[in-house]
Image (cartoon, rainbow, N blue to C red; front, side, top):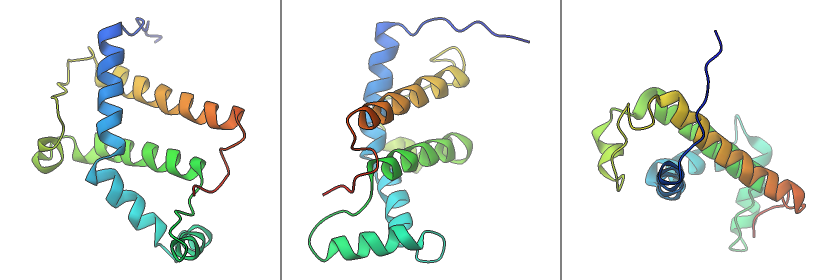
Amino acid sequence: MRTFQMPITLSSKQRIERFIDWFIRSDYVSNWTSEKDSDFINEPKRAERCYSAAEFGADGKTHAEVIEDWREAFIHLLRYGWGNDWIMRSCPFKIHDNGFRTLDRFETAVNEYFDSIEAWHDKNGSLHNQIG
């Protein structure tokens, strides 16, 4: 069965942008990224790069890795953390299950925003560059 997607309204777009701004700077994403940066077992190349870059005060991750971390953390938040009071307490606004008519619509809008950021970095040649 095919579902019809209504275009996102300006107010919904602004809520998406506010949510993403909060989300990518949240402790939730920071902890997620930190674990991956130091995971010498599952992410040895990334961990080594981040470890080496840290000696010089740099980050070591690529933009592609950061965006992928955002995606993974967002999926994890939707699947397992949405009802967690600790996570949602720090969110500056409330997202209700019916706030975007369906949570699928919200998820799609956030992922489209991540896609646009990835496309920008790809177009400008910085997607696979290390972050200073």
